[in-house]
Image (cartoon, rainbow, N blue to C red):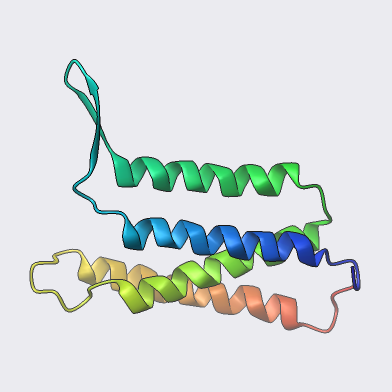
Length: 125
């Protein structure tokens, strides 16, 4: 622990973030969970929601100072933003939502920049 930052929580957030991004990339969207009686669920969305719940509960129950939690969540946001830029099919002609996703990707980049400027400021203790 250096300067009040718990690096184990930050590295745990990074590992959970990478696993959560892999859920988006490597699970086929055509898989479904059939519970019978006409009740079906998309397997990919189920795993993504459970993964997000695990990340939130990890940050709630792993007690640390606020700076470590904020830095861990900022690292997850940065990885998700970079994965969106790298892997999203913006130039697909069949993708009608590419413009909206591109706009919110730009806004997400602004948020990532502002958050990292906060962490690189000299006033942090």
